[in-house]
Image (cartoon, rainbow, N blue to C red; front, side, top):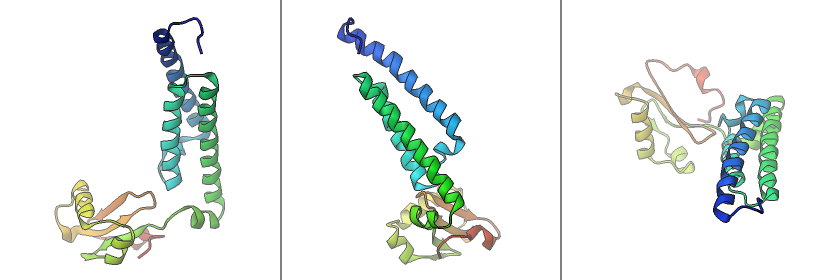
Length: 171
């Protein structure tokens, strides 16, 4: 990459130039494509976030210009694909069916949904931990626990649960 430098100097120069350049490139892409880029609203968003992070690491440690540009190009294609899929989801009814899992109720009004727990490979101890994270103080206050499409677990607690909140959730 830098033919006249010693190995140590080349490694240092590479990191000092490629890492910030790659990071600036990611920032530029996010500004162009939009805030949804790292939103993790769907499983594909999460995969895109992880892939871009991995490609940024590859770009920062690239040992040749072709390897660097391959990583940068990969970032561009992944984020453009993500933007395209988000638009497709927004404009068609078939895209969410193909691209996403349905959120599932794992616990509702004091009743465990054993079949949903088994199918999602989620344990009750996973749910207890999420309830503690959500500051649940009384199990009687928990209206529903939902495994979201992203793999996150939502704990809905309080006095009353509006059925509208459960729109699109598999019971």
